[in-house]
Image 1 (tube, one colour):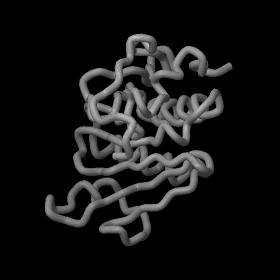
Image 2 (tube, rainbow, N blue to C red):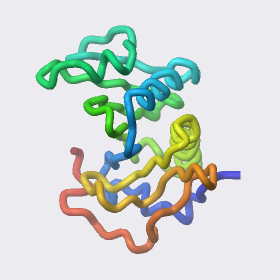
Image 3 (tube, rainbow, N blue to C red):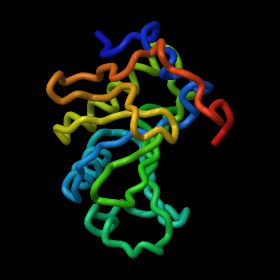
Length: 171
């Protein structure tokens, strides 16, 4: 059985309401948490690509990535938990694990199930909450993985979502 049902959460998957690229994060993270995510990515069977400044390469340790100077090239860890669904991690700080997903790739019950499975894999490995907010709205999570419940739960009323300024345009 799915953590969430499409009919209940469709507003949280609407790019016109949430922005196409909602923000997903794990707060109170550490280098060790990042390393657990890197290890999960390597061992999960997911397709992935690590790049620095747009140049693909092997995935180093989290300690190496997070110790890079502030003016170093941008780092992206692109992860496809299933074909056609991309999550982009940007390791910039040990304190927070953050990534984007594209709601246009997560439509219907299948998309909800993919997202719930992905958030559950990350949150379950870390034993920490994983929260999704509308694009650029870091303070108001709408859904997320709850480690105590061991599933993805609603954190806001899907019927109360209002159009975000600038949402509905490609960001």
